[in-house]
Image (cartoon, rainbow, N blue to C red; front, side, top):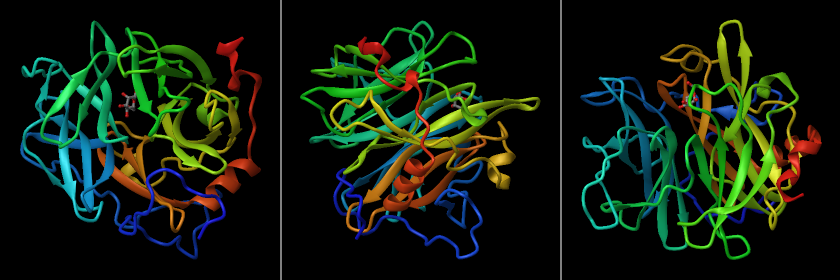
Length: 342
Ligand code: BMA
């Protein structure tokens, strides 16, 4: 039993799990699954790589929305099924979205999906074309029919994460507005909606960091986990090197009732590329978190992340340890709190 209570998701006794190796020398209490990557290259005909993907518990097992890069290079979203959260069966056809009238709808491309259960429905959020990179959304209750929802924002924005419950009666979404290129900037903002159609009450949450590992841009990662200490957010931070950008995983804790307020923000990365499957691939040097599973009974958290834009990796942490680490190394700045409200 952990001291910090996990309030999102309840018991998940079949969460994928491996204890931290006794000889682990990392600073942060986040460790990799020894059998990574869990999804390898060329996982099925027509798909060269699967990465940056999200999972949810479903009917005693797990379901995933997967970023599948086709052999023509165009990414779409595929469904995956698993009994253990580690071995996946992937449906051969891309998710057949429908529009509000039930007519087929297929974006020109779709990538970096997230998946979250809110009340009795599941929502997928991803990046798609809408006169430029924008956020696409769909709702499902059975993983057979995915009905698209209105685009929440105008372009350009390609990184969005929903909260798993309403706060003060409103749905909440983190996103990272940007420009038309491979943006060399970006902060995390919060938007609210009464109905998943109209989004507003925009608030600034976090700027790119003062520390070098996240000094270029940041973006939401996994859906925030509600804990007794606040919303635990795993996000990505990007640094620039003479060999290109490097994506690491960072951690922050947001206020429960006003999540645009950053209570703690870890000045150190929690996970940075260092294994072969993170350093070598289509885009070397990328750890890109998109989902977590968590078990309220034990405090265990499993983090799913894209590795080198090529593989899916799995890492683990324990809520008490990761919250203590984030708090012990917390550095927030003026830009991390409520600029949008003033
Ligand atoms: C970002 C997104 C991610 C990708 C990352 C590293 O801008 O496009 O899908 O993982 O770059 O290439």
